[in-house]
Length: 251
Ligand code: NAP
Image (cartoon, rainbow, N blue to C red; front, side):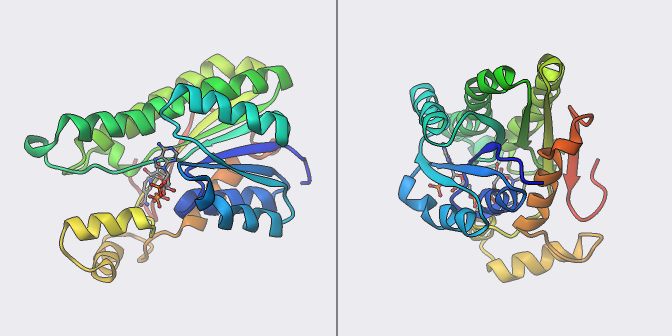
């Protein structure tokens, strides 16, 4: 497929977002790589270009309305109307409930939920006008509940409800919305978790692999493949779904 549609991947500087940006470029998309620090997007932008796509890096905090509006406006001006959105930006502020601070809660809600809301609202204008669109939001197996992640579990479950609602509201405009719920994917995000648990990252990965039916941890590319499917032209009858990419059953 060589459709020159414009995709936005938030949190695309590294980890899952970087792999998704590259995979979408291989699928023929142009990609705007949005992350907190524009300079940090350089490597992903280069990877998209190497895969044959046009790309720009855009610095924006997805939890801030003005920043989101400015970013989406700039992307429309420089690359063309964005009709594919991957809500991937995320942070962890893990703690057991009794130790979780107001800031731990608010920051996680702001980036994951408010961020996905603001980005989706800004992009849907372009999607509705085009009569075509794809929204993919990163949920998590933590949506099913996970010790130390009351904030994160709540937002990842929230994104599933958000996704189903977008699917219902936007379907008539040719827009689908789906969620990917990854299990254990080897990225910097989980380095933080290993540090918090006071074990080495390598031991953390090895321990996790033992619990996963396919006997390995996931890689960002495993998630990117699911994003490529959901954002493809061919997936137009698949909407409001949550796909667990976790190496075995979760839900
Ligand atoms: P990561 O390596 O930590 O990358 C996340 C990216 O998001 C970083 O580049 C980060 O920028 C950026 N970001 C954070 N806050 C932002 C904001 N307010 N505005 C714009 N960008 C922001 O994480 P990952 O492991 O690739 O995870 C990507 C997504 O998948 C997240 O939504 C995560 O919750 C979800 N997920 C991950 C796993 C896993 O096992 N890794 C499992 C399930 C779900 P900075 O570097 O500047 O902070």
